[in-house]
Length: 336
Ligand SMILES: Nc1nc2c(ncn2[C@@H]2O[C@H](COP(=O)(O)OP(=O)(O)OP(=O)(O)O)[C@@H](O)[C@H]2O)c(=O)[nH]1
Ligand SMILES: [Mg+2]
Image (cartoon, rainbow, N blue to C red; front, side, top):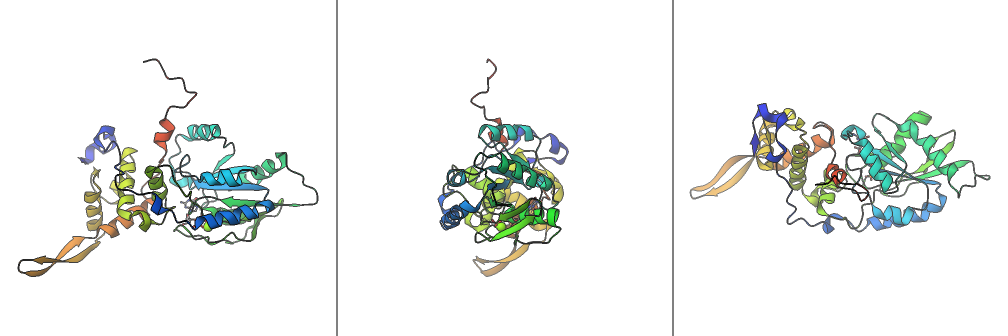
């Protein structure tokens, strides 16, 4: 389905695929079992910890968090940091906070660790949470120890580095990277603040061993929390295109100079490949022998499409809009 350039911004919602076909997708194989090991180690470090900061991606504020965190680590004060706010469409921020509040998540801060936005709110919030906790007995202990947890690649290590920049004017202490699985083990304590004296424990990203549905898995994958090849870049690219069109986020059209928005991933990748000169020779066997045919490199185009999105070049998005629109238990619906 194609939409002419002139009608781009007013494209009717009904013009797009109304749903994404998840047929043939298998969630289970996306999740490596070894993450249980990280969680065990985190549990055993828990006695050292005064508070937990859970970092999650602000583009999926209501989905994809690991329920095991709540079950196994839920006994400590908890702050949810929704990071990468620069990449998220936060028009419905109040609704998001309301939903989280209903789920019992009362302390939430939106951050951008690349630009240190809202980072200064973290230490005072955490200090207050710890000191107001009924278990809190300061005694002789003059330092706070906080564990940073979350699914892979959401910015846990970046948050630690950002706090150090803000409070200590110090450089990186924890390795950061664009792929999931950069932090491999629960690390030793890293100081992030002098007054109060605060240490953070970095941890490896841990995905839920079971996710509730394929769409949640695809949201996590599109945000870069699952290694791309486990899901398939073609599928991630298609889900991304579906989501961008559904949200009428058409920045990709301009970015790749496509002229018009389109809901068909094959055509979009073909045009991206040609635009970026990502083409390759493929041998085709014909009746008269082998012929070299020049073809668009769809994988290279999908790679660029996904990376550009993750680097914020294709605009801000909110993957959980549909969840926000679901009627709530206490919502009184108007009479028909
Ligand atoms: N746009 C944007 N990118 C961010 C932000 N915070 C972190 N990143 C990027 O996200 C990627 C992952 O950051 P990390 O800090 O390594 O994430 P992590 O959660 O420690 O990842 P693992 O150790 O693999 O679980 C890196 O490329 C960071 O530069 C942010 O606020 N905005
Ligand atoms: Mg890390």
